[in-house]
Image (cartoon, rainbow, N blue to C red; front, top):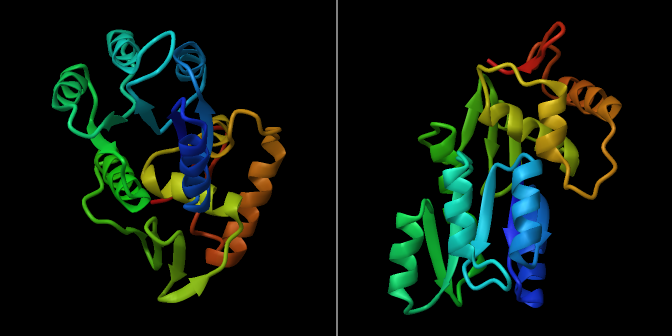
Length: 217
């Protein structure tokens, strides 16, 4: 799953990026509105964390522009504590949730997971398919109750496929959602990750739909 963090406060942006990366997400970041708008329009994100107090183009203007353009990506806005009018404007402009500054990182991660569950029609915190369970809260995967150790990219591939289970996911879509924008993207590595996951979870767990992509039922 890939997330765009739009925050102009350098230290906070670094903290968000580090926490999200540790939680198993691919993360891009932008410190001002123009860059954020470019990334949102050209990259595929599963969620955007958006600060409202941005230079050049403020967060509310960006949000309205995205929604008017038909961008349906879930957006979690960051607002100054006590700025209730910003929260109202943010929700009315198309935000899906908000967190007030200063905040605890655990709250941001919890709200982010809830938005991703809602976007995927998932009702429970854990993702399950057959004997495989993926817990986004701990970046933990088990097979029939036993812990399965995955690399960060293997986890991202599995997480995205399980969020999309029942649907065929193309190789290009996987590439767009597991790599950060500045990462060297190689489609051949997707086949390697799929092969490794099959060895660890069972050969039939991830189905290849010839000419189209991969699917977890």
